[in-house]
Length: 421
Image (cartoon, rainbow, N blue to C red):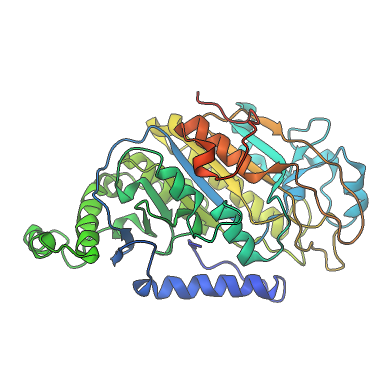
């Protein structure tokens, strides 16, 4: 799980398991030089690159996967105001119907998502509700792994984004890019070469900046090395060279929220505008494990997170320049929250959730089959759409990828939320 930042800490508000996940991510970021990724790999500066001949090219489509770590409360982000159980189940944290944005008979957006209004009105944002894993999994760690591997029953640790990259031509590590501290999320693990880095300006050969002779010497040193490390090093040199247009792309960070997510999506936009063949980018926003103190519709933990999410997404989609027509963004979280609020003004680990999509090919509005809510302390939002169906539709429509290849065993049923145009 790549982390772009140190999440804001809320003492005793998130569960012990998620606190452990956050700490593990921090530790892995600090010791990333000792990582062993799937296949031959090496760490150079701020990048982790697996070995493969590099061949940068223009990407016809780009997918940005934004993970809302901790289990985002989809019932607060996209509110089912038309289901009367929602207000009975959440007397303290429900978002009032008259505050919701872009309401239809059943759904409305949390008011903190207002920065997305121009995109929503233009039909470029969609919400698919009641999505999630086929079987409930309330463990942060194992649910994250299951969502990102997306191959139930398999013992092979290969992520769905790595399989997606493997369906497209080319062999450059730049095709898949994890924005973060050098640790790849499970979704990018696998045989296809990918890269991970937190700062595009750090994608250089250490100690060789501006010194062509030193770079040439290093290439000569590794040129005849036939070992996996040798192949990996040559791939590093090629990928770092190919990343030059990314480093040269203008930094528009001032147009984004001054938050970790804003900075991460600013980096992602710079990568896209570099136009070097990047096809998939992963970004994380942590700190959604709200067992206590969710807050109200105007302020509080969830409202602040949602406002950051919407403003950062809007800034990103407005920062793509002539690449905007190829970029699709999707959000995903490991699970949703219980229907009924708990005694601490929060919600506990649940099952069904909402996925947001924005950008190229997206058919805006509300999608999915609503199952209805029920009360009871352990009541969940039931999943009516396997999250893989949404991702498979993106892969098929935007990349021409076979759903059966990217999601083994899935019987794909198109939802009509994404098209090729």
